[in-house]
Amino acid sequence: MAEVPLLGLPSLCDVIVLSFDELVGLVSNKNFYVYEIRSELNPLKWMGFLLYLLKNPYIEEEVRSLQLDSAASEINGVINTEDARPEEVEKVDEMEKDSNDKVTVSSQEVQAELPKVKDKVPAPEDVEALVEMEQDNKKRHLNVVFIGHVDAGKSTTGGQILFLSGQVDDRTIQKYEKEAKEKSRESWYMAYIMDTNEEERVKGKTVEVGRAYFETETTRFTILDAPGHKSYVPNMISGASQADIGVLVISARKGEFETGYERGGQTREHVQLAKTLGVSKLLVVVNKMDDPTVIWSKERYDEIESKMIPFLKSSGYNVKKDVQFLPLSGLMGANMKTRLDKAICPWWNGPCLFEALDAIEVPPRDPNGPLSYWLAAPESNARMMPIIDKFKDMGTVVMGKVESGSVKEGDTLLVMPNKTQVKVIAVYCDENKVRRAGPGENVRVRLSGIDDEDILSGFVLSSVARPIHAVAEFDAQLQILELLDNAIFTAGYKAVLHIHSVVEECEIVQLLQQIDPKTRKPLKKKVLFVKNGAIVVCRVQVNNLICIEKFLDFAQLGRFTLRTEGKFLNSRFN
Image (tube, rainbow, N blue to C red; front, side, top):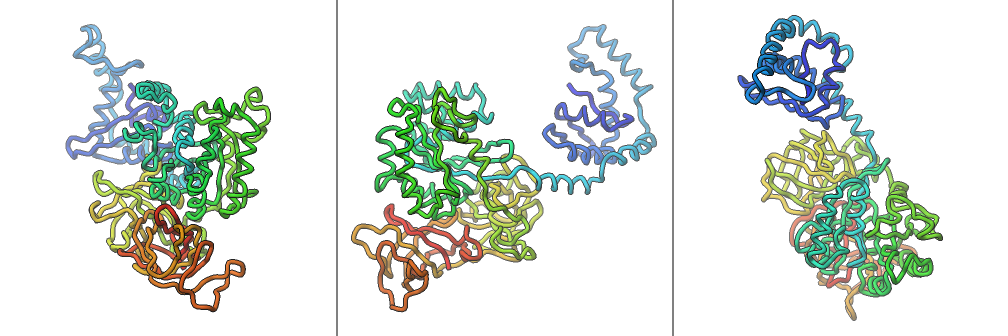
């Protein structure tokens, strides 16, 4: 047990060293104050908290009693007089007697000692400022969505990443191995790290977007494990809308790549949806290269790459700048944290997955900008965070990605579109409580002033000075990528609209003008209907108010997709 820090120590250094050992509680029975010192706090927070303790008159009696107890402490622990032998109790009594003579500190001595402490430690206000600066200078943060056809190995690859980065211990892996073996699904055990509910484990299919965290030397990552089955495409859209970069997982196993790549396969649809939803950087990982039908074959890898490149170009990706291919084995962890052994794959000279993720560059974010990095008018400092989920935990807690500005404790914000004013009580990032969170962070925010029943997925936490627009009808530019067989796009066309975390039925009430695909200028003739490949400006109507921004002002909240029976349109709000 750690020794209790003494107020009479000549140096604060001793207090700091002792305080990192474990939790120490100082309780004032008279005033019912409980002070918790947690070992995970950084030194700056420690110093500010210790200063607070030294200046607090309510804990003087408790500190004195703790000093007496600490004098009876041994290096390996404290002797309990009820359990100790008689000679040990006598020894403790003698030590307590000596401590009364030597350790008792008067309030004058404490006050005399404080100036020495202040010389070494900044004021609490300065500590808070430094801590906030430290948060600003931390590692960059990226949200990575794993997409691809069902059974490509997305969850297994995500689970292996968490295991290799130290987020999951060997004992947990052994437990999952045993559980998978009992279900006669021995190769699924690594996916159990990401697929946490029983339905997903029994079926072997991801249903909801899994969420996990890991770090490399330069970057903090949030993994968003999107479902690959076509029945859960709306959940995939929700995950991709939160992502900065994407990892497209393709199975190299004979027959599996072809199934996903053929018309109607989820490899194609996920790529097109990812581009539509703003995922501009893509890592294409050719998984299952260790499969007996492949055995790290360069010919198979080249075949997949040669087929994917033209499709990626047609989907709008700049393959040279924004796309990178690499082979790996998610189940075995090959070419993930460390590069491939030449004995296994002599032809691969590129990076491993962790290196490729670290090397990806994304546009910088401005935490003071009103609309992230798309506008440059910092005076308005708008804050926008689409809400993807909510629950009750000592108040109302909402989850989402901060798209613009920053969120911090004490902020007064609006929940749109119902315009309810709320106050931020606490902010949590990667399961840790923080003072503030900037753009791009996936956070949990505890609010006061609203009940969880009054919040729906798709609502937006917004600044009071510059709230997000809430509309029931808007004009949008649509690119018709794929319609139902023999269908035409005209007024009265009904679809499901997906934008950030909103899923809402909508209807096209009017076609306003058609755009020339080559010149991007409007055509003069009146438009009554259009077919596949056309670009059209139309008026869209929804049943309920939704939160949306102009694409030119804020692309991430102005980009959406319309789906009808698995077919979708590339869309943006004008």
